[in-house]
Length: 479
Image 1: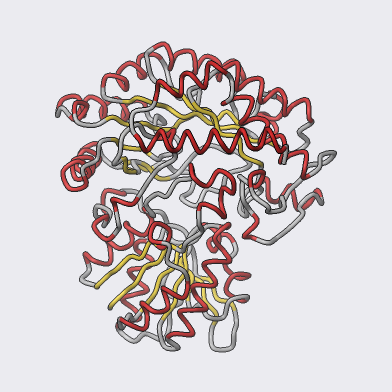
Image 2: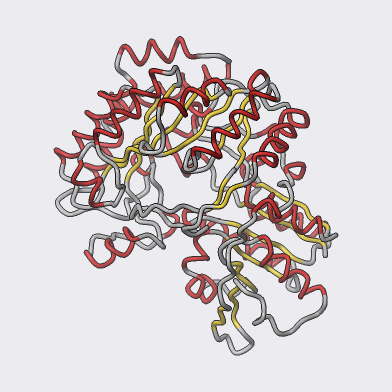
């Protein structure tokens, strides 16, 4: 079959508002994995990542009219819902016969509502999509009429009855998946968030799937079981990015890169053995309770220049409430050790957690300044579908909207309304706290000086310049 896979364009201006010029555009890795599986079976595949090339639904419809595709697959997360459905409508208008399949976190959590509200769509692929998509494509190519034997899909039958098949078990050996088909992407157009890199090109690698932790704000599409790519597979993927795409840096985009100390140590030792640490630098993300000084030293030696930690709040009460399962003391120790070995740090924080008081918001800002990482991110709490937080927000009556396009964690910098405002707080107050947190953190004289010294390229300089201007404007306008 001739297949088109689409990542719709939710522009950086829609996502980040006043901070758009420092917003990232990164590879849609899920599509590259699905494309690789389809290509291996002999199907013809094209990917259109609409964001970096600014393709609107009408542009995508024209592509459908120009080339005879048999099937279109559209991936999207919750904030992309509206633009993804606009893409589906445009494609259906351009071609009444084409099969339209959707996938991604949102439809995995809410398949029935999504399909019943968008009749242009034929199928939804739920959860881990590689083999599900392959089975569906093979069945369609053979002219099948009964799809109930394919695990992990949903659809409406001829009587418009919602059908969902049993879930597909996650693949335990993820090395079985072919290497992601990055050659189908415009690799030179991707720009991560400035605090994620020092030199371009900087590209993403995923070394694991799954998460065993129980944070109430997180939706675990890949399940609780953590599955690892082998060290050999990861090294092969790194070398491809260096040799074929000129990578100067690698972003290990796993939520908990150091979840298995033995695996992380083996990977670092192999990078050193093969001299990869002399060719590229890399950063990763993890939890504060999953590192120690011994591990940090080998990571530093292997080329790790930055580590990002989910801190979330300066209030131990709130950390316990959202089931983060860490302590303030663990947070402080992790930042101390990471700085001690010479690795830069970044901290992620959330504003407006359930029952959070203004005093606790100030505790969060205070902890950020006390930890003094090299970067900090303050997002407004958004209860995404599929999370415990979503259920709590619905039952508490504090959910303000189910307009999925408004589910934006940077809403303080946009004109969008907040979808969730915890008890005793107001929308305007939370938006102002998000801006205040960034201003108080980044406009400190020491931080300004540190960022000036950290500039390694014109690209980084532009990002810091525009980010600084946005912060100054928000301070002057107070809106």
